[in-house]
Image (cartoon, rainbow, N blue to C red; front, side):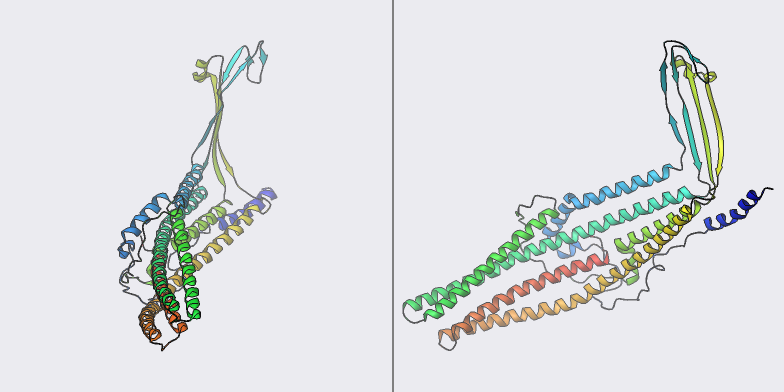
Length: 459
């Protein structure tokens, strides 16, 4: 046996061994980070995972706006188009497993006869050559590519579910922000009315010589500050309304009539266990699908070292008339079965394997990072709810105390026992406490939305 054949046979087992290394068996839990048995902060029950949360707010406005956003949002439609692209790519990858047939019909015309390799052409002649090629996926290389594309399509499909959840939460948050801005306007307007009454009182007393001009000037300054705050609150309304309209896929005209009052904070829903989070979170599931997709591509890259088995056929049919093309005597064809074993490609194949192995390693760490971020978001939202509830309760007491202080300051000023600065400060303290309470309630609602989103519950 020649030496070159001996060297080839010695290298074949090396190629086969590397190509036949199977990929790892992935597991959603085993390939993640170590998980605790329960959350460090518990809000509600852990018996079952969060389900549909949209109805827990008991707000017809929120439900109607979320439905409109899911129907008209352009970002969501773009994600749906990505799903269609990914599914089409899966079909493209799978097409390589099927026979490829091509026809190239032709027509020639000559004034005088002339010779070709096959025969003599006289006048017009029709031809119908065809070519058939088919790579037999003996080792599953093409199948791995198709599976990788299918897993990527699954990941994009899960991305769509995540986009739906995110859009529902953002729409609800925009509605809450709009409601808070409108209630803020009402609170500031009520404070302006109270301060206007004080200015009228001081103006009357000043006209009678019973009040100093400094007191009236300070009260007018304080009233101007409140009116400036009203303008700022009004600007918040138009900003929130336009942002909400964009989410709905509408022109930002700031004409949203819904969302007038903040809803009450829903009762805590079951949050489930940390291990249940991995199957619920769309981003975690999508990252896991992409990890498996990279593993399939790695398997395909390794199998590129194995021989490729191909079936090829080509032929042609010639005739002076179209009817002659169907005559079997006018057809010539051949069929061949081929075997191609890559031996040397400038290290391209091995470099491709190394690159794909690195991509799989990257996908594994990205999956684990996604899991950690998901756990952080849940723990953070659970802990924040306790803090925000405490803040809301403290601010509710502050509102009552400032209102009492304002009433006492008005009485003391009328009886000459307090100066104008004390009275004006009581008005400002009352307004600040009321707006801070609104902000605390908005933060509580938004944090609850963040919690539902972090838990991956359906809207």
